Image 1 (cartoon, rainbow, N blue to C red):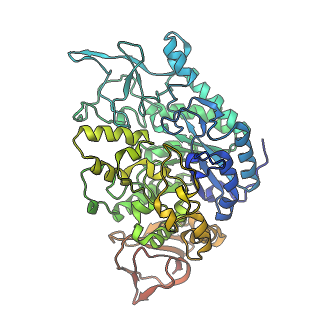
Image 2: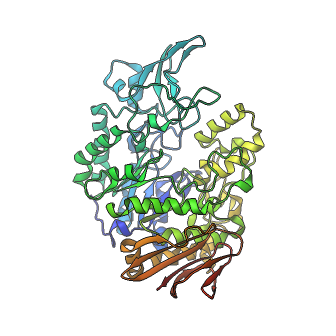
Image 3: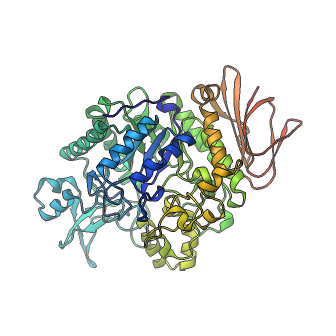
Amino acid sequence: MNERHFLSPWQEATGYIIYPDAFYDSNGDGVGDLQGIIQKLDYLHDLGIDLIWICPFFASPMDDNGYDVSSYYDVDPRFGSNEDFQAMLDKAHSLGIRIIIDFVLNHTSDEHPWFKKAIEDPSSEEASYYYFLKGRRTEKGIEPPNNWRSYFSESAWNKVPGSEDTFYLHLFSKKMPDVNWSYPPLREKYFEIARHYLDMGVDGFRLDAISHLGKDLSFSDSSLPVGPDGLVLDPSKYANREDMYQYLGEFKEKVLSHYDCLTIGEAGGGISPKQSLRLTNKYNGLINMAFNFDTAWCNGAFASIDRKDEEIYTRVIELKDNFKKWYDETRKDVEALPIYWTDHDHPRALSQYGNVEYRKQSMKMLISTLLFSYGVPFMLYGDEIGMSNVQFDKPEDFYADISSKNEVAYLRSQGYSDSHIAHYLCRTSRINGRQPMQWNSSDNAGFSIKEGRVKANPNAKEGVNVLDEEKDPDSILNFTKLAIKLRKREENMRFLRYGHYDLYDHNHPDVYGYFFELNEEKLVVIASFSKHTTYFSFHWRPTDVILHNYDDFIYIDHVFTLRPFECIVMKAY
């Protein structure tokens, strides 16, 4: 295991999410790679990053961009080699940067040797690694075993190739069969994989889709209202079920408790704060932290195919309520909470909660509120330069994401026009969080042009790129460097780690005002989410301004006049 020298505990880390395919292309083949990450580690160190979550780089046919794993022990050749991965760990650790990797636990690729063997020989051990059920005979013929819908819009069941009536379960792409965690030997296979990477020096895992490890093994129909196609998305059948806690408890006992590692679970599927404490409480929890999606969609964009543009705006009070709910119900019982605006599965933060017309002001506001919040903040690559959503004209432009491709087919079947679908996907597709990182103003922003490659946002030619922003003292990039540096200062970090968080003026519809109180001192953040001038009454006395995205502020008779997306981080009493 290589040497690791970290300057601060993980609870004080600043996290960064890398989607390797889109981060940096070191060899000009149009694909981001591990050598690209190695070459940019100094850039990330200079930015102030000390914790990186890297999305999958395992061998994969890339039906779902690496989340369909065909070998857990091999780096996919498009990303490099196993030796490149070790070199990346070594360099990151020499810079004091922790590396956690995406560990896909819920499913494999249908091209994984386990699944191939299961299909080839239904009596094999591997056949027990997956869920196989007979279909239902109806007047229409052989239909899937139940009415469950997958998260990728189609039935959660696909017929086994060459079979007349046998189906396998897939909660995501049909090329990603779910594995059967109720089968103990399957669990042992995953424990072996985890040990392998921890022994290599990996600092931990982001545990993908752990909410779905437990299923309703009766496989009965959902009783929720079905869609026009007779299917229904019902998380109660396959999300956050009791078995999940049992499986993760065994993972901790047999593997995680034997290593100094950090584990963060993707716990979507409507998990509640109370449920999450069973995973993350600091006394006997199963993992360290859990991502939830509650604060990622507070603008009405989710499932917004029938909404007009003017109906998509930040629901500031809802946003505040979600942050407060998670803090109030969990904070005293956990080591830290992971805080993020969006990740590789969501739209860009700037487009979700900011405004491209006020790119600098709104992204600086979002960076400030993220970094001066409780918990461990995670930025998605490109947030530090203000990357925004794509602006594609055709549904086919989104086909690099299998989820969007399936959604296009479904929406076309429901009668929506291609222009309507494309406009909708520009604000919701996962493609937004998977665009090429904008390193410079060249064609495709520093990536080679390749057929099937997601196109870079044209705004890279308009200054939204690393090279240009490094030269601009007022850029989002330089602001982010400053903000991270200020966050790490002990006199500020102590508020974020140990101060009591609360809201200031909960009912203000445009301003997220909050504070941390510690020994009668207060660190206060006032952030406007409006593109209009707004007013915010403040009855404490401002003292030290720590960070501000304008050159001055207007404060008269205990009222702040806040300009578009203005944000002030300050001390007060």
